[in-house]
Length: 128
Image (cartoon, rainbow, N blue to C red):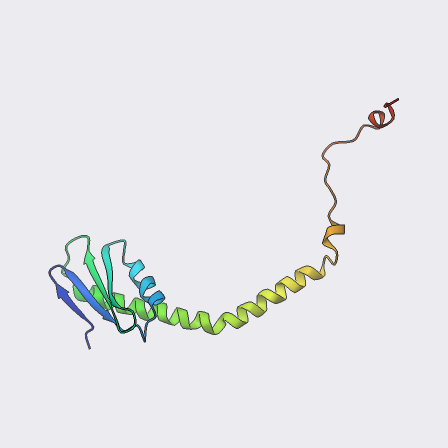
């Protein structure tokens, strides 16, 4: 099944936003901006069209489309894993913050003002 067509030196890929959210499409498209010009169009509720126009002439349009589709899978899987691991990351962060707080029960009393100079005793008593 092909979700792309070649048009006058550019490639138009049709992406279903119900399968790939916009953030995944943007992430995949961004990866291609180094060697290509990218235009996103369409209706984000029904179909997103990604136009890829290589900055240098190439005959490898099908390969570019295949690579873009692979990046959609890559970023889509990353988004799913990030979502699945969000609770675990939050739990770990809470644990780290709790552990760090246990060492200093009263941080305001454990901090002492640092004075890189020595106070001269003569200055304190020579006011008279």
